[in-house]
Image (cartoon, rainbow, N blue to C red; front, top):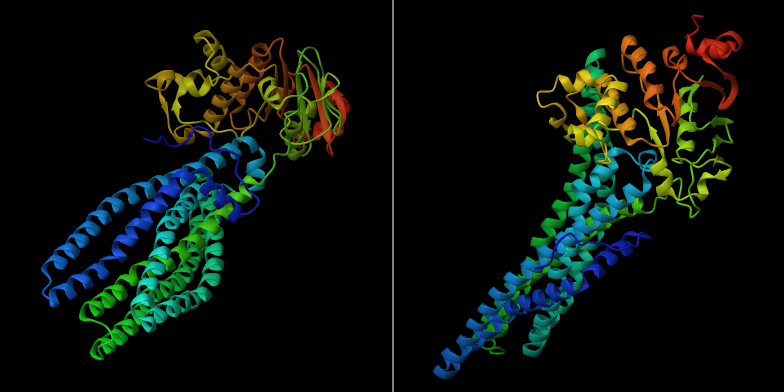
Length: 564
């Protein structure tokens, strides 16, 4: 039995949606070929039944018992063939669907991991979530319909050949009618494609809105903004509904065409066949066969129009996937050797220097400047950054991530056992955990949990307040024990007493290690070994906190909020 998902999904072809779908199909080529073969046999088993029935009826009319028994056995054999191939075809179709869906999930998750901090900058949360919610299903459906669609096309060709061999006029009716049906359905596909694309965009935006509301629900309740945002969500939801109605209007026309057009063809074939039988140009058995063919053709022709619909949706979904796969991270891995040693981490653009073994604080007049500097120093954004004189861009990215840790308030508290979520590397001892909890003043959080460190954390740590989550994130950062730790506003959500305790304990917890804290809190700045003041993205002054209060008016106004 085949194991899904596969260990290595391969390298996707993201140059376009059709190329991506072709890559997915090639990735399971043997399965799809087997599925197509079974689908062809399944359809042909059904297509040949009317011919066998017609022969049996003619034998009965001629009172030829042997021939009747022989053709009856053929009908039975075709029934058995349909049953066996139908079961196997469905099995291969399910495997094909799952393989396409899993492969898409694997390559998108791998790409999300590769992009790292670049992903939320380029795509919204809803856009990424929608890939898992709907796009993988549409891509799986596109692969599934290929099996039945190819088999249906073969069946239509086989029936047309049989009809032409039996009666040229009837065969020509089918031969001309099928392309006309395809041409009639064609004009519906372009507006369907366009409306599906628009609906998919709105669904992504709505998912982003929902994620934002859930993440900020506590704040919304605090300021009484639930009703405002609920109204906005309802408004956007109605736009998605209206877009869905527009898509459904075209799909309803397509569904109607799947019934009407084959029905017209069946009526024409039946009417002509009846006239030919009355004129003696065909036998009664052939008339029954022609009617059976006309009825049978409804199924493969519906399948072909269904294929047009599902392949269109798969094309739209593949375009979204390709958009994610075509993104490039802001930074890429180098191949140089990595050494932290006693090197100074320096950002050439701002002039910020983080000296080894010291607790350095960075106070920025504009918070976004501090975030940008932290991203460059952690190599989450490109920049002129050196470590010990070596450009950071030339060092292996995996080693940079292992030795330089940037911890900001955008980090999530993950679901799972609390101890596992705090000790992400799994190397900390009980004493290490205790000391990290003490340094971040998070002991009371664990003490309040009935199961302590063995307690299960809910999704995104929603059972904790904003300040508690911040202290737990600080605990996690300290337990990672990175050689260079960059903290962005690690105490912004805690009260002044807790902030004072954290400020006093942080330096001791990071003794001998290099630490940069981006903050404008006087309590934290006063405990730093060295303070850098950044204004306009550039270092304007440096020294101790008290020296800067006396000698740098801009710094004083920033950290005292203009009160000094």
